[in-house]
Length: 551
Image 1 (tube, helix red, strand yellow):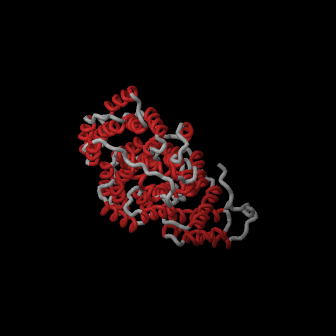
Image 2 (cartoon, one colour):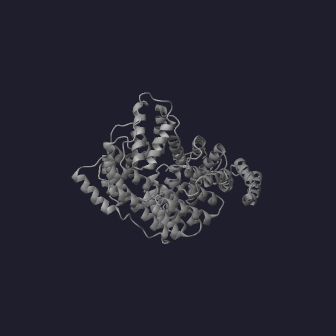
Image 3 (cartoon, one colour):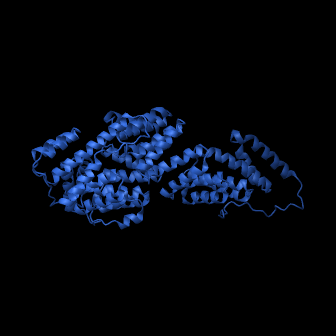
């Protein structure tokens, strides 16, 4: 990454101008935000001014702003000067008209299994192919060509078109983003033939984040900050979203809070912020965020997701599902909203609707583990472990170092009686960093089933040391008293009376194990008063506290 120079300002100003002319509003807003937050002024940067526009182009742009896309295409077709800008706007207006009709059709039907396609893309495909053969295309037309191909699910051809767009205009960020969405593996990333441009590190960080290589993505975003880009909301928000994926929720919340303070009306990634608040059970903060953005812009997909999370945290799952469905009417390509509405349908015991929602999420983004994991949970609840195992395996491929996926795999192996595979999964989940702190307990229960009490005791002792070090959570209470009950009996059987007395005393702190604790204390007292036996073979036994689990 070269140091921040005038080229960065020039490229961003060019991007802002060209995207604004062509009504690529999201890209124009991104460039404007970058320009606004870049630290200091760079001498020698020349901001490119818009070129002279014809009457038809000016009219069409205003029609597109009012979502009158067919009307815009009509005026552009009558423009005598059919240059690349006019042709792009005409074809882009036709593409957007088809998309608008598709979304309107989707909003009118109640059967979500029914699908619709953009009716304009086939004719646009033929027209753009003819244009390329007749006179060639510039980078912007290649970008539009890629969108048309992608609408027809021609992914390889679309990726080639976007690569042509980037090579023609290296500062054209929308084409970089579309390529990032199409990259499925790190090896595919290496094979791309893209220019060595200052936007490439932004692109590679985005790709790594989409591929769930979150630690690498965070390091790359930090290197961009260190290279001179400073505190830009886009970079901070991306880092916060990556940390949320790593379950580093405290740092994620700090990042989202910082973005919200810098730009209180910025809605991008605030839905991910609400996800983090939901996981942390921060009801007051989530309510404040929902009320704030509901007042700012209630008809926005991100706002609907925030409000949906708020109602879900309150246990009002029907209202939560309603808001997630509203988000999908506004943006049917939002994989996160499909996943969230799937979760709500699961809470409402509507498994068929949940299954459909998760499949929609995966159609949009196969790299998003949440859709695979949701399907695994659904089939697990339906007591279909073979199906659940398949979907958990797909989720594990997306997040190989996420302990939740590995624990879920271990559960499915255990339910199928494949205890050796289950033990390996639980131990791996512990070694990679057990987020939910259940792997050791589950591993101990497996050893109990196999009558390997020494290994079970070792697992339970490791678990108790873990919660002593990291702090006890609400989910740990049930596991704790079960561990105390097992260890009290185990130590008693091993004639370790001091340890047995200790764990029996701890059993008295819980209603579920109080009677067991009293029983163990009586047995310890009787055993201590019993005369020593010459045949007692347990004198030299040592309890496995720090021993490993040989898998």
